[in-house]
Image 1: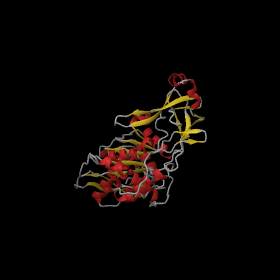
Image 2 (image 1 turned 90 degrees about the vertical axis):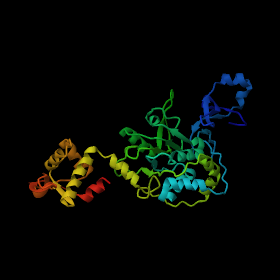
Image 3 (image 1 turned 60 degrees about the vertical axis):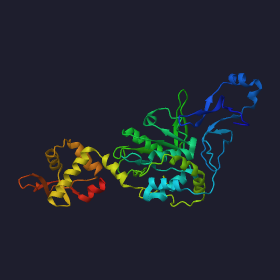
Length: 399
């Protein structure tokens, strides 16, 4: 807008900038297509000559040196209206410590990078807890309060919709109660987290490729299956959030009051980390047991059954490794009431566990089911191209 004029022409289309009421009592800025004839009726024929004109839209994120117009293009990224002021931030500090725990410095780095370097790729932050009243949603609302129009709340269905123009140009895409259990949902989320460009599509308009810099922050009450995460995946930062001992109903207002001081702190703070990967942090630095828990529970059910049978042999026979041919393992699985196809067992051994059988048929010691001695297994000598699995092998493959 120029000199208080709420209208603009972008390309050959007229728009009016409005403040649309939202359910929480605030407003969100929107550009609504408007007709030139309606503007003439409301303001007279000469009014159109004062309406600012732009060649098109662009999205150039910045919180420090924001430019509403870049060249002849209107910037769709919105300025945030916080004015940095030096001050104390006890409530914000307590929230960050609660969310990030022993990774507090990394958590502050994450927020600092969001503010100071909004185009930097960052890991998908996933907050999980089966308990209620943990502060997960409060953290999402805190992010929204900082970045205002540049943060948006999505639903699980929004990721599956072909229309994405309402969120593709945001800095933060946050989802409360995420449950993306389909493989295609997980792959799309991972690809978006590292994508440099993305096809934006709105109803009735052609798809358009734009720069994509959004970061994802997800929350879930499901600690086991919120999303599909495969072993060796490095794009997720999973934090299990503890239960809050007290419930301060005015806490979010206290957080908002400290945002100007927090912005000042971020502008003057030195990052605790250097860039170690395309998503800034090294995978080792942001690795957590909560991530391992999700990976374990996303393993194929057959793989879990196979590892449990082998661990059972190791425990009862007090050995640290087990040798077997494919037929041996199939017999053990059948005895354990595990239905399995030989091709799938072979696939797990080869593709998941990265095991190869002995190059030649050799003598080996395997185990068969036998409850006559009350142990459950007995050793047996056999000849064949056998696999060798150690306890450490399965632990490393299936943390």
